[in-house]
Image (cartoon, rainbow, N blue to C red; front, side, top):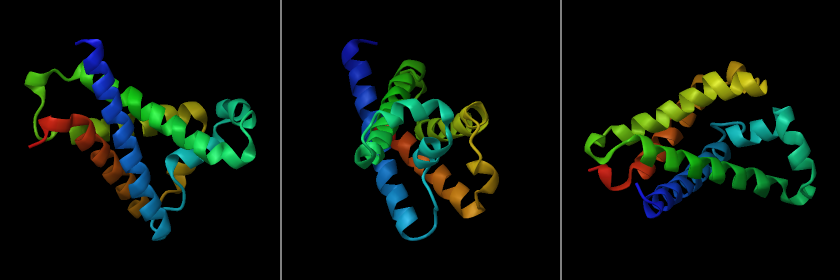
Length: 145
């Protein structure tokens, strides 16, 4: 795997995170999702507060979104490094997206002391799962038929 491959996979991760943003904005606008996970992290994660406090208040939403896109880029690069071309198939990308969501819910949520998962309704959970499936489909790129 060369640098061009890593850049391509990271770029797919950014585009996938952007698509998730669109899906989430629609979900919030329709009243199906109260807050997006990046918004919850920005509000509740104490470790992020010092960095966000340095950002002018009017730009904090954009800073949170850029952080989500960087996280998406990292996830795309990891996908490219972990999933060899011969192992890629129709369901590998969506499964990877769900795995990232599961890792977030079981790892980062407790580590950062977030409370949103305990309060989240089933519809909200399904929507967040769906946007992670979307992420995986986009990150997988041409491997999805």
